Length: 189
Image (cartoon, rainbow, N blue to C red):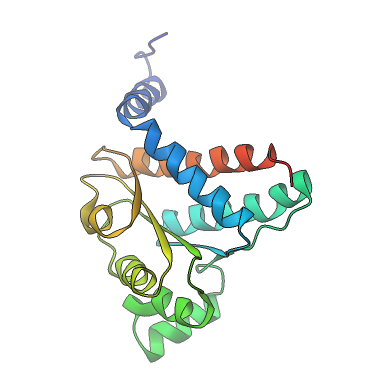
């Protein structure tokens, strides 16, 4: 049922249009990447700026808690946005552009999954983290909007919300985390 009589209805209609433009096979492959990392005992790192940082944190909150409670198998997830002291130390002592890559240098192992979220796909600190992970044997998944920016080309795997609207793009990225959680919670050890 189409709702156009309110601003909320208009927004939801636009969001529905974005849903229809997304290649669901890319979402399925991205969910499989997270599942594979989890089943293989690899770490999963998430990162992003602003609203994407909160989405990155939300993924790890849901996945670490809910997946373990549902399956009894630990989920080795970590958001690189969580430690404000560490973020500020790297920003002050090295550069904000390196806050995520520097954390990966001491924590990431080959085969670990790095999930980078950037609405524009052009956040320098996100791109540097993806570049580092690619060069060090990590698996990279980029979630982006707009035209995908540099992230769409740089990440090994991509979930792209082809819309020129930050909030609609962020909505799609947020929902991805819930899709992952529900799929993994149905898995058996």
